[in-house]
Structure formats: structure tokens, C-alpha cells
Image (cartoon, rainbow, N blue to C red; front, top):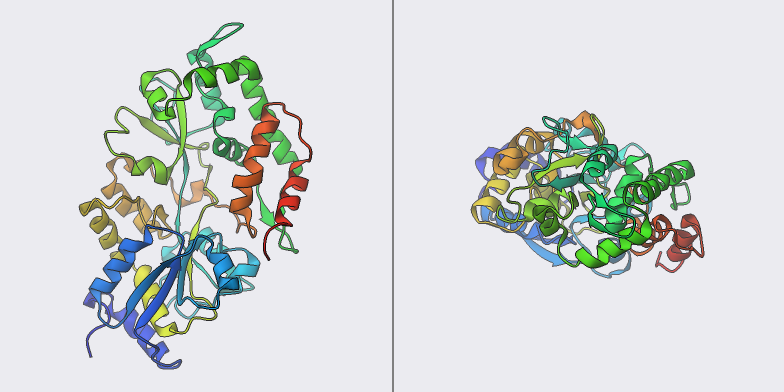
Length: 413
């Protein structure tokens, strides 16, 4: 019988094959659902490297909903927003793979813990991203550092800003320009969103208020107030932020690691970056990608073979090199830093020279808890607009908690 995987990962596959005899051989086809286009090169490589299984890729914009509503079933899922308690229960435990086919010590420990419930591992984290601030040649006073805090941004902005009583020629940065930055600012100030016993999101009110106060003071004390900020935005921000940074009109731009490093070297020409955070404390973005095997999977042995292959250090190294060699438009491992610390801290910097000496140690990264059901969509639809209105001093019909609750009532269960 032909070897399922190349010789270098054969011990892993042997463990899977032995386990597979207990549950039946299954069919050759493995159906994979994903909401990430970056999964396509992974599937292509798996299908090319072995001839026992064929992975068929299917895109789902809302994988969690498809798991609940579709009459069809997936064998493997790779997606974000599937780690909440009610969705995690739709997956089989993968504990028997850990230690036999997958080394749990290769993972960032807090990330791996996010995929467990009641002592069982239902999901395996695959990738994550970090928030970053980019700037041009201006001295922001962080030479030799890998992070930049909001306080440091404001201090540098005071020297950069050119504002009079009625208008501004230069503004370093404003929380009103990007709702995603405003949200990350508040998370940096201590906001942690968790799932309560009823499955609903909850957060500490004092952290929300503290973060909003920082944003409001930034606009009013540093940028001359909301009116001047608005005039500046209308006058200049029709151009992309990255171009305004390169022109020296503004000092800082906000981005995520996947978005920033998907830009070409030419587009990032003359730019430096720092992670949004402080020394030894860099909050990881909530958009973590997980892999799992649904309870209704019909080809469990094929699903386990694929999962074991996917979380092999040598395989991920080969995949990263393959993506760069073919100039595939993706960053890192399925659009982010790998959940395997060895890949993130050693392999990815070899593929992206700008990241050399910039990868934070694992204990510097503040990984978020599992996100509640619908949280990513709630952030985009409800939370960001609410925060921007609040920071601009606009009247609100509801507080944030009531706004989120009202929106959640309209979503499918």
C-alpha cells in the first residue's frame, strides 16, 4: 500500500492509521469547510504529497452556522469564530492526537487552552495576528524596542502636530480615524470580552470607560477637539493612510500583521513598525483561526490524518517556503503567525526579514479568551460604530451592552 504521507512524517501517520483501524477506514475523500482563502495552498500541498486521501475544499462565509444548519457534513473545519462553548460542542475531542501524532509542547500554551472545554481538547489553534503601528522616518523614541504604546504615540504626536485654533496641517494620529484601532486601544487599556454562563458576551465596565476616556482625551487635548479632527479628516483622509504616512501628513497608521505583511515590499518602502502594546504586554487580536473535526464527520480517519499532517513543524516550514517561492498572496500560516511557537519565532522571520528581531516572546503576548458566539460580527456591526460615536461625543440611544444584546436577539441560534 502506498505511504499516506512523505517519509519524514510517517511516524505521525502510523499513529493515525492505528487509531483509524478502531473506527473504520472511511472513504478517500475528506471534506473541508473554511472561511479562509489562505487554506487553498494547504489543501493543494496535502493532495500533492500523498495519495491515500483527497481533500475537497468548500468555502462557507459562516462556518458556525453551516455546522448547525446544513444537512451536509464536513470532515474538517478551519475557521475563525468557532471557539465559543456552543460551537465547540459540535466538534469531536482530538485528545488522542495530542502526544501521539501532535506534540502539545509545540503550541503556545494559552492558545491551546482556548480550544479545550471541560478538560477535553475540541479545537486546535492554527494561527493568530498582532496589531501594529507603522510610521516613516520620524523619530518616535522607540529605537531598539518592538512595541509602541498609546502613551508613546501621543507623546510623539505632540511634537509632530501642527494645529492652530481653527485647522490642522498635520495630525499624528486620531482614534476617530479607525474603529479597529479604537477597539484595540480599549483592549490595551484592559477590556477583556468573555463568554458568561449563558453564552452571552460580558466585559468589565470600568475597563470600557477607562479606554474611552483615553480616546476622548487624545482627540480633545492632543488634536484640538472633534471639530478640527473632522475637518482634517475630510480634507486629507480621502487618500490611503499609508500614503499619508509616507508623505508626512500624518505620523502613524494602524494595521494588523496579516494585512501589513501582505503588502508588497515597495508598498511598505520607508516604513517602520512596532507592535501595539507595551514592554512585555502585547495584546493578540481576537481573530484566531482554529481547526477541528465535527461530530458529524463521516471520514474521521482521513480528517485525523490531515490534522496530524497540518500541525507538523516540518510541514509548516515547507508550506511557508512553498508560499513564498510561488508568491502566493498570503501571510504566514493560513494568514497569520503559527500557533506553533517554533514556526512563529524561528521560521517566519526567515521568510519575512522585516520580522527578524521583532517577534515577541510567548510570555509577552496577551492571548484573548475564547470569543462568545457571534462576537466577531457584533464587533463589526455594533461595537465599532458605537465606540466611534461615543469617542466623538455623539448622542447614543443605548449603552454598549444594550446595543449588543439587541443585535444578538436578531441572530440565529
